[in-house]
Structures are given as structure tokens and as C-alpha cells.
Amino acid sequence: MKFTKTAVAVAIAGIAAAPMIATADTTLSGDVQLQIKGSDADGDAGDAQIAAGDVLFGLVAEHELNSGLTGYGSLRFDYDALSNAGGSAVDAAGDAVKGGPSGDSVYVGVKGGFGDLRVGEIPLAVEYGQVANDIFDVGAEINGGISYTGSFGPVGLIANYSPAPNQDAMGVGVKFGMGGFNIGLGAEDRDELMNASAGVSFGYAGASIALHYWTMEAAAGADDLTSIAAKVGYDFGDVSAALTYATQTDDGAVDESAIRLDLGYGLGGGMEISTRITAGTDENDDNNDQTDWRIQLAKSF
Image (cartoon, rainbow, N blue to C red; front, side, top):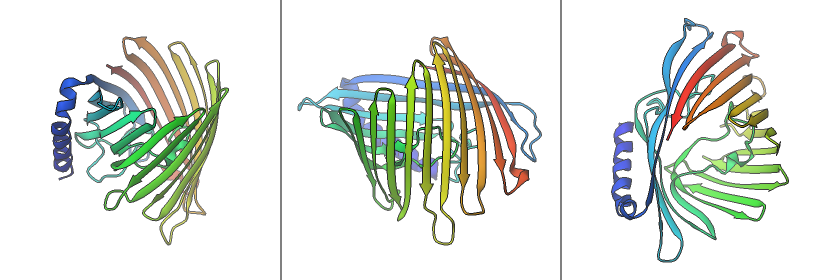
């Protein structure tokens, strides 16, 4: 049922966008990722397996409007859709739990000197402060909403809204950047629960460091979650490397941490080979400790 509804939404959006796509600057893009990966999680045989990562293609079309503004639309088809149970399920390596194909990144918008106004799948304001990777993520995607983003000198602003019965969310965020330093703050009210994040990063000559903190308010009867993450990275030509450490805790039931190493090398022509190793620890249950690894070959176009 979920796939059927999504397919209908994609079809309707495609029909509505067809006149613009026919006369607009249209870009076809995609990504294919194949992985060899394994895990030492309890109950896992530990054998390496070959699996697909992101497998997707999409269309983005832009067209100058009579007012001098630019109208645009996006359609994307993802093979690596999340499971029919919904949510943003990921494994310990940070990869999406696979389900079946579905539509994604379906949105239309208008942009110009005033900023960017978008309807459909929208960026998350609360993630403006999450600058040090997403091992533990404060945000969940919004597929039915409206957003505004704009830049005013070194300051970037975002506001988004999704009414019930969509995600029932409202958020604001701000970024400030100058001389290699960037500061981000974001907040969101979702289903009358508050989420907020704050982060700072600095980059110079290919090296970077980032720190962030977020808090997620829990429903009645549960403890609020908090997370602290730090990331150091270096990019030199076609080589990239990053080391991330993150924690997620509440007042007792949750006390998790993870360290992740990412290495990548660009082969040219949109191809990259990379590796990721993630070691996760659960202080409350040693049976949940595990190490996941993957080697990935990706081609983008």
C-alpha cells in the first residue's frame, strides 16, 4: 500500500511538472553503489555479503518564469527504499534498511533574490546544528511540507512547516559562516515534542573539525535523548578521510556510543571507491556491541 500511494504521488507530480520539464533545463542524475560488507553482531554469521547501497535516478528541471524568478521541480526514484514498516531505519554502518522501490525527493519550488520557497519534500531546520555526521540523527524527513531558505551575507536562514496529518512539524534554523568558521543552530516542534541542535565547524586547507550537540524530547513516560558528536576530516585531491565519534544517552535506558572511520578515493569519471568501519558500544547491554564494515564502489552520473 505504501508503494502504491507513493507511486501515485510521483505520477501526479510528474504530470503536473511535464510542461515545465518539456521546456526547461532538465538534468538527469543518478547513483549506483555496490558494497561488500559484514558484521560481527550477535546472530550474524559474519560472512561477507555483496549488496546494493544507494541505487537511484532522478530528474531536476529549472525554468525562468515571467517574473524573472526561477521555477524548479524534482522527481527521484529510489530502489533502496526503507522497509514497509516506515521510519528512517539504518543499520550500525549507517546504511538504510532495504525494502522496495519508491519515489523520493518529490518537490517543486520558486527561487530568486528573495531566497528559495519549496513545497513537497523539504530540508530540515533542526539539522542546521547537526554538523558532525549522522550516526545518531536528530531529524526525520518531511515529505509533505513547505520551507523557506535564504542567505543574507554570512547568515543563512531556514523555516519549515508540515501540517497534520503529515508530520505535524514546525522548525527554524540559522547558520553563520566567516573565515572558515561555521556555526549552526536548529530547532523543531514535531507532534508537540521539541528537538534542537547546535554545532560548530572549522575548515582550513582541506582539514576540518566539527562538534555538535542535540537533544530530542521524548513522549510522556520516557526520558529525553541527547547526543554529542565530534568529527575530524581531511580532503586532498581525490583522497578523503574522516573519523567520527558520537554518543546517544538518556537518564538510564539508553547509553550508546560509536566510532566510525571513512576513507574514500575518487577514480575519476564519477566513480569512487570507499571503505567504512563502524564500532558501536551499548553500555547497558554488551550483546548489542558490534562492528560493521563495508567496501563500496560507486558510480554517479
